Length: 322
Image: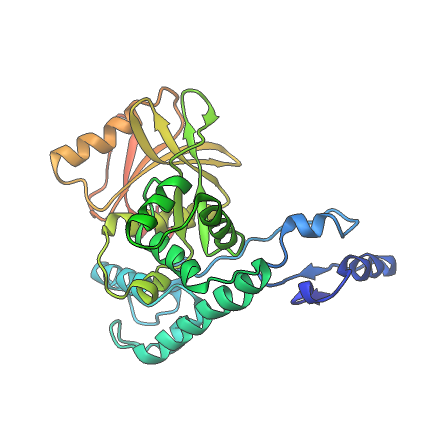
């Protein structure tokens, strides 16, 4: 039995529990992101349950929607579309197939705007009882502009206050929590690889869909490497990893990914063709003393290995062609 929008049913736990009395029943609950969380279900349903995380399309799934043969250059074109025109499944209905670069951009923008307003205005504002909508939107625009960057609640509050949007730490923390509860943002904690402990400051946040970033900020440029990092982070979550930001002494590792088969380490870089960039990315992984798998993911199509570090093209990795 599938019960959708379960959060609108008062005492829904009693309904679910009664269904199990019939026997031979599987129950699936879905609901608006910010209004029903796993912690809410745990207190109301007298059964063990499994949470099934849902994400927008992976790059591999996105590629499967195109019928024409995809060349190496086509991967690059479609990756740009994947970022710009959204990874939400319904976004593909606004393309003029089979062309890579022909879209009904006005209709797509309206779709994304409606989706954004439903999440922000309907879910978050109503559930969190937020009165200052413009300040809430200022926070999500700030976060969209700073994806994949180390930050803290205090840094966010100070930066926004300096830009003329005065806001205190407690309010920022409440807003960020609301966006994370609604899966608009994902928080990655910093982890000391050598000390085997989590650090309290300078976490990173990632956006669920980069098409939303273009909706919120227009064509405002950002480091393409940061957007690539955002894509890789979500892909690691899709593949079932718990993902953290790694610290090794004074060096940083983009991702510490803990999965069923152990821990893996990832560096993500748009290109490593320059000697300085290559040396920097390798140094962070070389500083890790254990022998768990280590990867550098890059847009470069040359593949290699270095001191046991596997260097892969990130688009092929995303497409499942490791």
